Length: 74
Image (cartoon, rainbow, N blue to C red):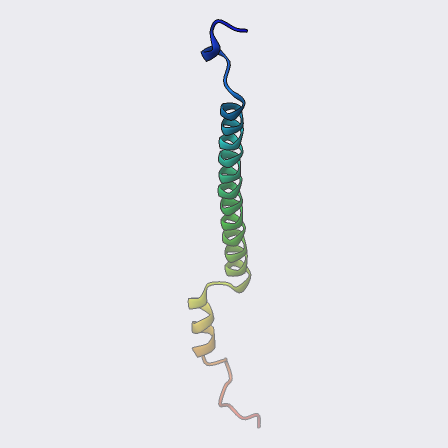
């Protein structure tokens, strides 16, 4: 039997340490997943904004009178 039992962690301490490690790994994984989903959402929004153009430009185009509008061919 060891003369210094405090040098070796008990099975309970080892289990608690392992569970704490797994808990922190799970929290880190969830945090990384959230960051990944946020980054993907930002990419999709930026892509949609680029593909659709600026909303202000669309409004101005819709309000603009096309050339020759109101002129009837002879």
